[in-house]
Image (cartoon, rainbow, N blue to C red):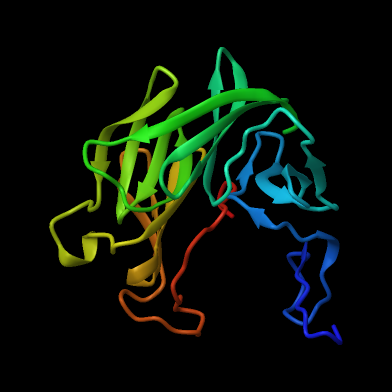
Length: 238
């Protein structure tokens, strides 16, 4: 604007749109937003902060996303990082973490509405993790990404603790992650953005490599290259 402020506007585009197409279904930009997930109903869900209150962004990707500002009852931390949907007793609840692995859990409805605070938790590992970047749930197993590794996590009271970690899937130099990765999952596939090695990798349920996008260790702006990839949000084969 005339005062030099930059205003961000969030929304979406149609699959057939070209880069110069105007954005549609825009919403007010959040102060802060965490990792987006997809519900079984194909609804997007993301925790965030809006006008000084915790908020949930939710809705279809084909229409305007709803913003639920939570006036009270949710002790959400600042500095949001990862988020994942898990089920306890058949009911869904959302886990949100910051980069230090401190978390907040909430009970949600099937369409992503806030129901109640489910308490604080911590991600506990055998060795300290400097930065957690993301969470994912694959085939009912909670996964976390931090410091270039992927962690499998099991519930330990109100917390989650490491049961296994991996940072490579073979002996070759090209089969090792760089120092920063982001994860997302859908169905039985795990997508890993290997930020420092300039690629996005797709693994099956047995952690066998299915696909790789980008040119290893070479950033670029052509269609075969990526440049510091971070969060992706897959849905099926999309």
